[in-house]
Length: 122
Image (cartoon, rainbow, N blue to C red; front, side):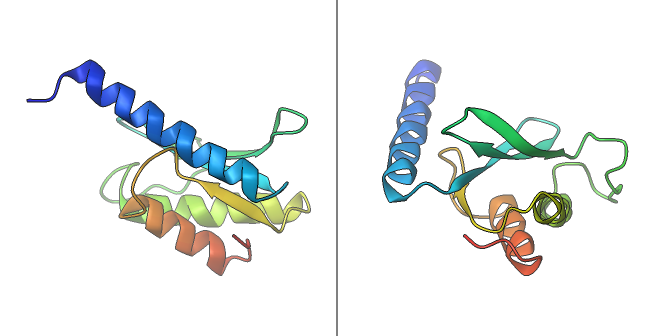
């Protein structure tokens, strides 16, 4: 069995490797998607100023409730729509997806597809 600390070290390496590649690509804003044990969170970050411009989470009271949980694929798709609309209202059109070292599969893929459908460009 893999040691827990080794697993955490490997994930931190994946995160730093993907963020390094994102910073080399361009000066676009970064759309960060994170998962906790209970909720999903998305935020648009300006790395140059070091500020969060737009923020959305499934634990917000105005977030639409879902039948399964606040961490399902349908919740991720709804979160993608919410963050895309908030970004459009703030005048943000182009972003880079930072998936925090996670595989582009499941909730992350559903989130990204719904954000693209609402008009964000990756």
